[in-house]
Length: 138
Image 1 (cartoon, rainbow, N blue to C red):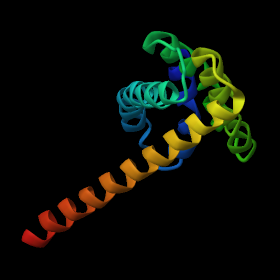
Image 2 (cartoon, rainbow, N blue to C red):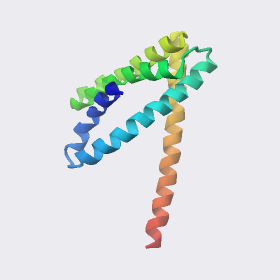
Image 3 (spheres, rainbow, N blue to C red):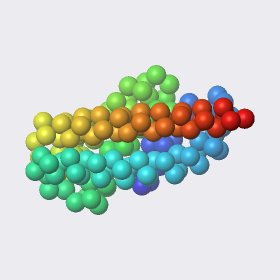
Image 4 (cartoon, rainbow, N blue to C red):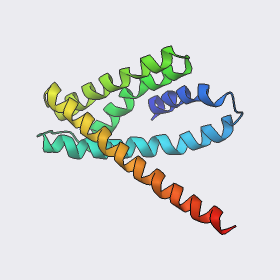
């Protein structure tokens, strides 16, 4: 979790300009561990479909370490490029934890990312509908 917390520092660069550092830090301290737990569970299930042998705690540890490149987001422009390294380290973490091939690990990560994107889009649509309803009542 310490490595995940270090990776959260990457988002600090984006919030320095609007003065909401405290809000960002509190939000990130809650959201990042939740995201890591969800991501671990999702990649565990998908990896098992590929014949993976990982345990939840082993995969959680590996993915936590794999998220360390996220700390590079502190560096403007270069940070975004370096954070793409997270995909590579994530694939390696999934491959080694599950003891599956690189192709299966890439499939696991890609399928997981697609599922997460769909979930996030649905949540934003629901949030937008909720906000539209709340603000139309006033």
